[in-house]
Amino acid sequence: MRLLLTAGLLLLLPSTASAADLSLTLSPAAGVQYGTAQEAAGHLTEGAAPLAGQVVELQARAFPYDGAFKTVATTSTDAAGAYAYRRRFKRNVELRTFAPAQLETSGARRAHVFPRPRSTFKALSGRRVRITQFLRTPRGVRLIAPTIFYLGPETARTAPRVARARPKQIGRGRFKATVTVRLPRAWDGSFRYGSCFRYSEGGGMGDPSARCPKRYRF
Image 1 (cartoon, rainbow, N blue to C red):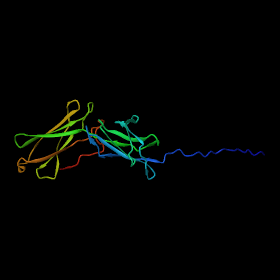
Image 2 (cartoon, rainbow, N blue to C red):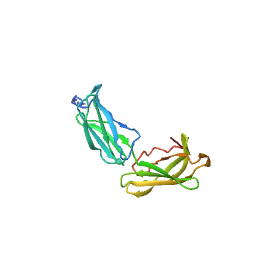
Image 3 (cartoon, rainbow, N blue to C red):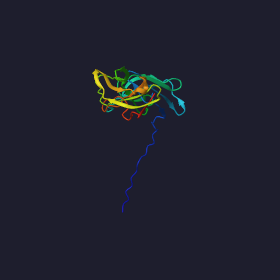
Image 4 (spheres, helix red, strand yellow):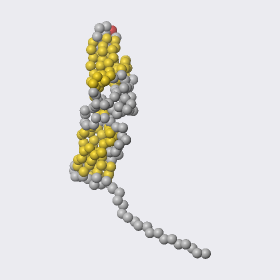
C-alpha cells in the first residue's frame, strides 16, 4: 500500500487592517428644517492617540438611499484629531465619513430634513379661528400626510388635538394646511395653538418613525 503525502506552504503576511477609528455624530440628532445646515462631526484616532492633519471626506447617499455614497466635502483633522462639517441638504440623506490615508470609514448615519413650517391664524366671527400651517420644501416633493392641529387656553402648558388637514400645494415647494376651530366662551378669545407635521410616504422629508403626540407641549 502506498501512502500519498501532500505538503502545503503557509505564508504569514503582515496584517494590513487599519488600527484607526473614525467616529461620526450628527447634530441635532433628530434632524433639521429645510434650509438649515446639518452639522456632522467626529474624531480620527489610533488607539488613544489623535491623528492630526489627516484628510476626512464627507460622503452622502440621497433618499431613497439606493445609490452609491459620493464625496460632497473634504476637510482635515485638527490637533485633537477632530473634524466638523456644516452642510445643507434638500431631503433626507445618509451620511458617513472616510479617511483615505487610513482606509477607515465611519458608520452611516441618517440625517432627516423636515419641511420648514410657519403658522398663522385669523379671527373669524362666532368665536371661530382659522389656523394655517405653511410648509416649505424643495421642488418635486409631494406632501400627502395630514397636519395635526392642537388648541388650548392661553395659560395652558399642553393642548389636545382638535383638527387635522391635508396640505394643499400652492406653488413649487410650497404647501398649506388650514382648519377652522371654535373657541370655548370661557377662554375669552385667548388661546395657544400648535401643529405637527406627519411624514408623507415616499416624500423623503422627515423621520418616518416619528409620531405626533396626543397632547402638544408648549
